[in-house]
Image (cartoon, rainbow, N blue to C red; front, top):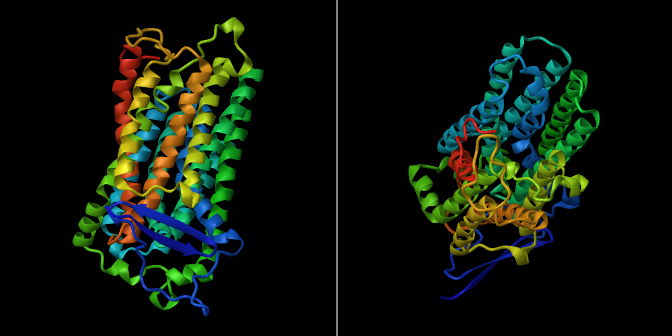
Length: 459
């Protein structure tokens, strides 16, 4: 088969795509350029920074609620939900997110993308503000507070779905480097959360038991920081809509929000776009199914193999697990960032599919690691990984391949010849979220296999 090389240039950025079947081409519409006939430059990388912030914002709600889990545990302590509230958090957030994302994609042809972004961001700011207030003022009984937070998480899942729909629809029109910016921003959000967890772990270990007031202040700081990042996203996105580069892709006479191509979306274009990127959709779906099946449901139970009396500080249980989160998220972030270098971009859907299937090997590797079976469990898989450094190396590779593959799929999809670009980006995002849901379900049988126990009751 012959190979092709198509350059996509924006400002000083150039990215080349090579495909053995000549499938990946720059899929753009005839748009206006500046007076020199060139695409406007991204001065001071403001456009890149804006999409980077929006990437953080698309996963911020989930991350901030999970980061404050110790605080919520203290508030739910006298409720029947105290031991399982994180399971409720997952279900009540992810399921509405998936359903409303699918709804938003299906009706994308009549959607106002900028309005979706702005309303979603403002709604998330309001939610963060409401939770921040409740950390300082006790307005509810413990059970009432649980239902209040569950309701806010339900709303967060919905608004996050519409935010992701808008962000991926808009960024898909730009050069692939900006899709990479969104993915990199999502990765950094995980790193920030991991750092906070380590600081919290050290604080709790030193003080043994933090007071309720200290937990409230930590949660208040988390939600205040989330408000600030979301407000900053609103401001930078508003500035973006007035930039020459944005108006290049969304000319004012065609409205700042919906390009005419959106009005042509139909069931036919939805099916046609999906048919062209279905292998990429499966690749990103399978990647996140395996990732969520193992992380953190299995990896969070893996402890150091070093005898307690010989352990260094980082090998102590209270730090070993938070450090594992940090390692995964750092390398996931690195992987998500690599497609920013054109020489490291892979667009062949067959290579990406094989890459995705390769993730299956991590199931075997982590099951062979030192998984804590709990009080009632029994190891049924032999322990073969007996070195902490080998485990950390595996974890690093796991995070790196997850982030790299996800970013490659998201970058490649909108560049496939003949697709509706913004629809392709949103379809890939939908299958990524679908993978998270299926991965959460897969985690239960994998946990049962790792501990020889009932995954719903084992510690």
